[in-house]
Length: 522
Image 1 (cartoon, one colour):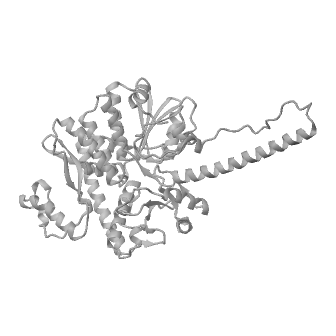
Image 2 (image 1 turned 90 degrees about the horizontal axis):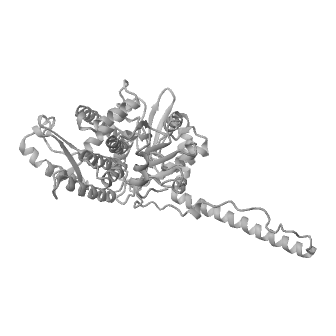
Image 3 (image 1 turned 135 degrees about the horizontal axis):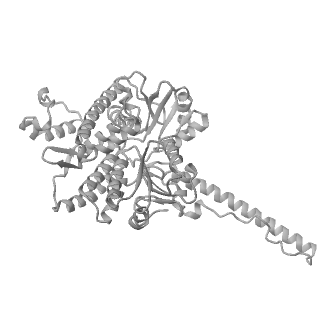
């Protein structure tokens, strides 16, 4: 069920308990976790933090800890599946789920006893009505079982005929209801999308309790920016939530305008043809010639107009740590993401998670700067891989969708073995392809991307990206399509990611899986 009062129905319940905190491996989840950790530290709440990157890790971690805890908090995981069916918990276990994944599973919505959804209800949820999805079991026994000793045979036959007709009508009505239920659930579940940032939800909680600090506000900003960087929400949703956070920024800084909320240029999406001295562009921005710094924005915008690139300015935030350290929210997102998905061999998934979580604290700027260096490497590899894919015509039309497969041996291929990095590459590849192709039909197609995952196990990661259009609502239909294609061909797939549009597939089954997907979407 949806929690309407986060303070009373959530925080005051767990405040005196030991809780287990499951946190997904994305930047928004880390930011929500940081806010909740700060609140817990303030109120001396005992908790255990367990990072989880997929359903298998969540199930394993729950089995290991379920005997020690009664209250469980899940951040950016658990809302879009039947959680009780997957975890099979005891009847006294309580789950608080703060998750951006949509649609929310209807069983979670209507379970009042064990599932508590920390989700903004002003999001466009469109949850089906209870009576359309659930139906109490009807008594199948015949109703006319009273004593018929004194009844005439003709009366018995009449009553029996009426009961047969009534039962036939009930079965027909039930079949019609079940058919209508399937249609309603199909319409509700066919698209995957994202709602309000979990970090913003947690910041709202802190604000309601008058415990919101500047650090918490910054983490909420980074969580929202992660959704924008990952293209998870619409431009309208982003602008609306930026407006909400701007009011908090003004309140915290005691003034109406602040340079922390400024128009900024996202330089990862542009390229421009200007003869800037190589010596200058290799320096930090602060060290460049004043004339270049003053004119750089105009030069970028002029070049963007030349290439037909829109929306070059995006409202965002920056933060100062002392006099020396200034960061844009988007740079922090890239740095944190790169730390979390670092391919360095001496770090495990949990180690990377802790490094990324620590980098969000102002006391660990060295880790943030290390993440920025990793992010630069990641973005350079992304740009080079996109150029290579376009130059070698690796993006091909399969009919209802575009398809691109990265080959084993591709430079920096290990950097794209994780979901967020592969998603970033796929989205920018699709944008670049749409801009460069002359085929009008291809401009409207979604993209299926495949990248090697494990050579030893012979597996690839397959990801579906919705079409790149101005009116895109960011809804992704590939999650359900992947499930049906795998079922229809008995392809060996693993649906382990919290994003349903990302799966692991045996390389040997790729051809028949793609054929089924083409047939399904045609």
